[in-house]
Length: 71
Image 1 (cartoon, rainbow, N blue to C red):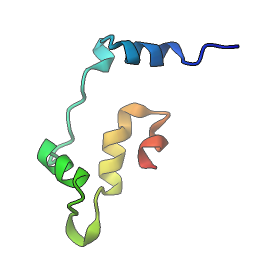
Image 2: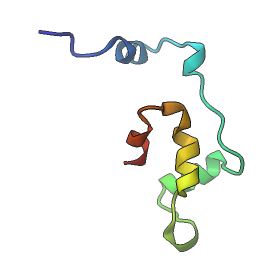
Image 3: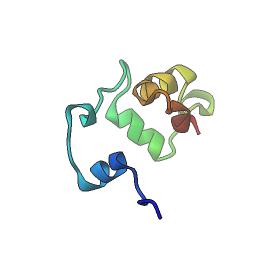
Image 4: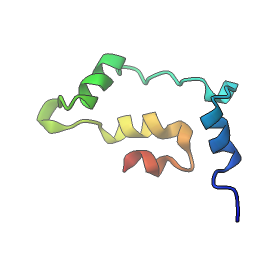
């Protein structure tokens, strides 16, 4: 039976850090407070939480798996 996790998952679970694992900076105009308010359910204008452009910018470094971030 194959191992249950891929090597990249094991590295994540072990907490190993690499340069590529460093946190990404937020796009211009987006702050940690704004993201927290969205997480808490406080909505922006007309109920929009993330614009398509904001979604694209936040998931850009996930290519080719960024559709997972749009779920």
